[in-house]
Image (cartoon, rainbow, N blue to C red; front, side, top):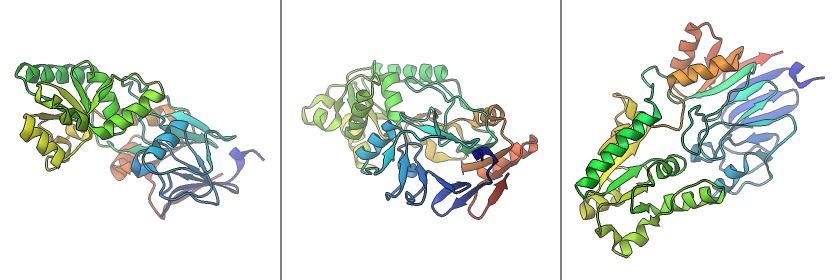
Length: 331
């Protein structure tokens, strides 16, 4: 019997999303890898990595190596399986969605090209499981060229005053695109944690300018010679590293986050300056994903799940949040 004719169940469990197709059990980004099934890990951000091994773990080779760098070594790791297709999700290096049995799970996804990251292409499917981190209509991001122009103008103004600049974004993903977009400014320094992650990206062929780690730069007195630019993780203004960089060198912080787009969520604007640049789809792009998928059933996860599902239903689309205890059967 074809897999497409077998009964299917999609549900949220305490261990994450479980898809059951006949006797096959597929966990999508589980909290713990399950020994009884196939475990798909979409990418290596910490909120998507399992904390324990068990069963087969399916992911890209990049996700496997980044996971290892972050302290979780995958056992029984495979890069491919029959009847499963890994689809580039455009989120970070190695990030994938999963297409199987006419189900497409997006993982975290972005359809915009951003430097070395190419936007995701959406396969058609019957069941779509999509993230909706920015699933409110207020989250419509400016064009990337506009953001880069404004950020470069700001850096130029600060440099003209001899002020060093710290560009902040998530250590994995955003920090590497920031390095690529603004690495032409110099001298270039990198927070030590970003330097390690950049080196792994370079190993996989990503073109990033080399920078000196912040510990080495400070030890050798290089930060005294201003201005300079540094790429660092997104850190609170109360963080000791940030306070030291401000008090010792008069550095200014510039953050890059999709949350900077909103007036409601102030945590997206905790740096001196902020720009709405994200590794996720904005609202309009999420709508476009659903449209291109041509799915009969849409499940929303991660983010504004209720609001986005309701918006989709208003558009005549069969959509619902995928919450624990929710269950649908397909034949």
